[in-house]
Length: 568
Image (cartoon, rainbow, N blue to C red):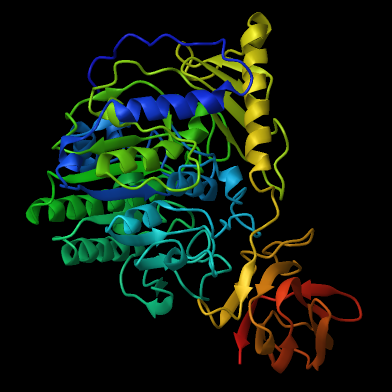
């Protein structure tokens, strides 16, 4: 690894009492913030912020992390010019990581527990990084992947972004995306308007970010570039793939590396624009990824892949460049996580604190090498399929030295970063202490709002019409297969007449399509092979309810592809 010589490990406190993680984080964050007031912020010279997150790019998918085959010269150079986190942590999958990053709060507080079937929608009352920046006079822009809700009140425009160019759902080509969209010439949403674009998706998103920066070069800006690459489907021009096939790599790895190389080229364009515009010195550039790699490949000897709470699933590249304040080549050894970036940027940019409590800690004293006392802490992550998290299932609780997996496996991460030797049997006291910390955390985050899903607004002033897709429906039969069946939890904001336009896969026999919302029902008989139907005017009462629509024949029932609800 291309980093300067490591410092001696810091002392670790293993004797924190139950629930002490909450109190310690709050107290130390406040004390550390008070000790590191920024001269630039005090003078009113506010830095710009460029936050870059790639999708499914693992810790080992960088030349900087000793990968001998991948070509990432621009990212490697950025890392050399930055402070580099030795151990930076996120969630095992993407939507939970994004919720943590943008709110500074653990995702279980926000409504986000998974990546699809309505579990990746973030409650609209969560205060995002974009809202915090916007409230302090920054221009805010998002380019790429949002993945925290496709409908009001959960879209980027509802959550603080004044400019956005995004794909819907968790990726291009998923059920919430317009049919036929692909990585090349994608159909995207510019400020909620569907627009067809020419070019490769990463190029298109980077172009938009550059245009946003250029437009706002004379005002402070917060730009969030969140690529959907190198997430599947692995679509990339063959010219990027061939050099890796020529090295003898398998096709899947060659495509991933080709997608990462394209990202790297775009990073060169983006960072080059900052320099050309004279914005480089006072722009905070943060690069990180959302989880580990999806497919097996070079992982720098870490255990596990995406979806795992072992190091390979949750430890990611992270580095930050700010020439005016951060010394190039700085190595950050204390553990840090996604929840830390919002409090860090609040301090660095002199922003107003949000009204809701944050779980993260400002990293600015570490970044500027002014931290004289950095107490250890316990961090947490968890993920598994399902509407409601289950205690200890696919979970990790860890501090600077020790990591507890699923409440029973214990690893000394400092001595054994590859998690090869379970030492739980010889360290029962540490196991018990970390279990207590985890139980306190799980109880606390679960009590924030519970796990009832956020509701999609119908008939609101923010969004009309509303498109409902399989991305966000729920239920025991919900899924993305032809035979799936689900429902949507909605909130009808205004009573009245609504127009329903429904698309579905054709049935090979005569069938009936049904609609139900509260006490309102409607149905009509479909011709064999029909793929679309309309209910011209359906009276809907206001309030929260469950929306269901399905096809039923004499032998089978299944759900629709999408439903467009328009208040007349």
